[in-house]
Length: 100
Image (tube, rainbow, N blue to C red; front, side):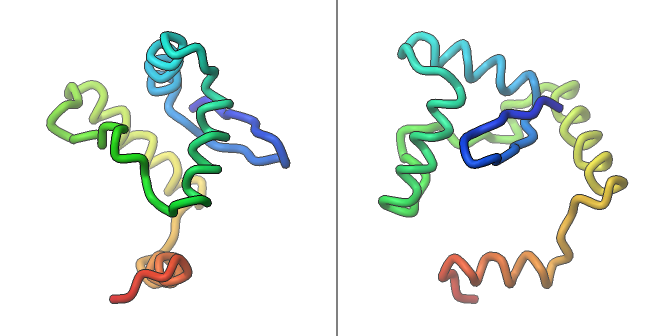
C-alpha cells in the first residue's frame, strides 16, 4: 500500500497499482496525482458530488489477481484494526446529510 502525503498532514493509503494507473492517465493532462486529489477535494466541497466524468470502478473490470489483491488489502486493514462497524458507518454517512 502506498501512502500519499497531502497538505495539512493528510495521509491516504492507495493501492500502488491504482496510483501508477492514475499517474499515467493524469500525466496526459499535465497534472500530478497529488494535484488531482487536491482538485477533487475542492470540487467535492463546491458541489458535494463525485465528478460525473470520472469512471466508477466496476468489479467486473478487475482481473482475478486485482480482486484477490483488494480482498487481501481489506483483510490486512481489518487485522490492523482499521475498520468501522456498520453502526459507525451509518453515523458517518448521516454526517453527510444522507437520511435512511
